[in-house]
Length: 170
Image 1 (spheres, rainbow, N blue to C red):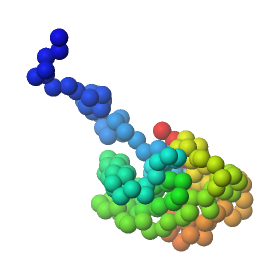
Image 2: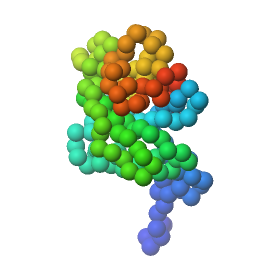
Image 3: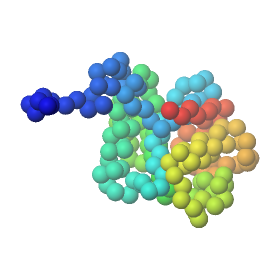
């Protein structure tokens, strides 16, 4: 018989006790690295059936981004939330996360890499792969000379950081 007065410990609490830092507990879906392998962007991605339309879901995702950014040993200048409808990019100054500084329609950015994007269900893992392909195209122009939203990414200073960089999924 299980003693009812005993407090149960969740798997997350056990992991937290074993962890040496926040990175051991939870990580963003992927990071983008510059040519010197410094993290310049962290990203959370939610594919079908999830999205950030619901206010609480979006707020929770933003809090997770802030947790990741605060746990980093360096200032990571950008953060990104992606769902099948929007790509939101935020700036981080080491203390505060901005409101989204830019918002792209996800299909407009990613249809270049998946022509049937608008006509099929895109699940999280595939969406993450497409976002990483877009960022790598911005970095190396492997698919096109001018990847979608290159101009806008340059205007916010992210394109320059991505050039000759890569992504790393967790």
